[in-house]
Image (tube, rainbow, N blue to C red; front, side):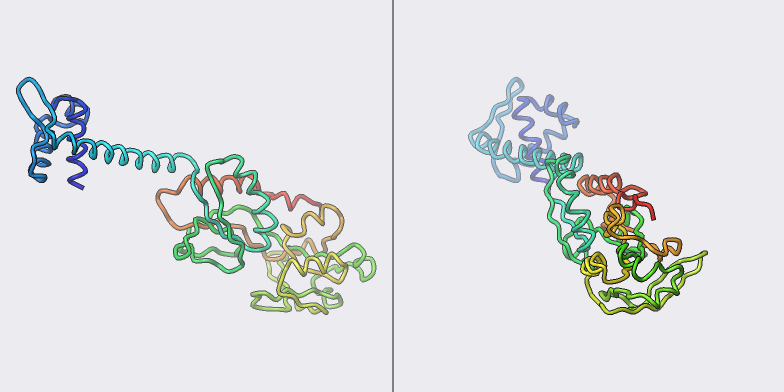
Length: 304
């Protein structure tokens, strides 16, 4: 590091053709500049400058050495400029992980608009329901749906996540509309089995109290999108997130039941590692998603 400083001072002296002018440009005293150059000459065991009271010139060794110094100082300045630009505007590659369903339905379709706004960025996204280790796997950001984010990360809430019981209008015409959660015992309920601690139970909230209702049916699946497609086919009732079924509810292809018994709510979060200097690319993507989803996401704009 000392060599780099002395090289920068030496290059400044050569370019200014004066110790005094180099000192002014560098914001140092003339004696400090002189000591840095003398120290550099001593470390190299070579005289770099011919000094007289009226002139300053390069020795042969000094001329050869200056060329290398100038390139190194310029590269250092360029490196600082690159870092500065990266801190000022979104650039580089943003590495993201997102859950399969939400990532496919809502993150992937948003990427073209985001990249159009930030042409200096690229995205490397992994869609996986496994919770990734951000530090170990090198992710800048994880988009996750959870009741409570991990304490070791910073979590920005992006949107509420609601679940609703739904089925096709044809199913309700044939089997009737449940009036209370207890009525679900007489309905064919499609059971989602992936990473569910209490399979065969649906949870609701009513008047501030949690209701846990046993359900059963002729289909059990470990994929919520497959459950969704089965519900759309009229097979039975499904408890699904509105980010998945909102479009069908808006179009009348599915109909919600028990809307007054709102199931336990989770939230969508953007999570990232704690860092005093949050990178512009991460900040830009989070701000973009907050603006895109908002407190009432577009998938929830339907009438129950």
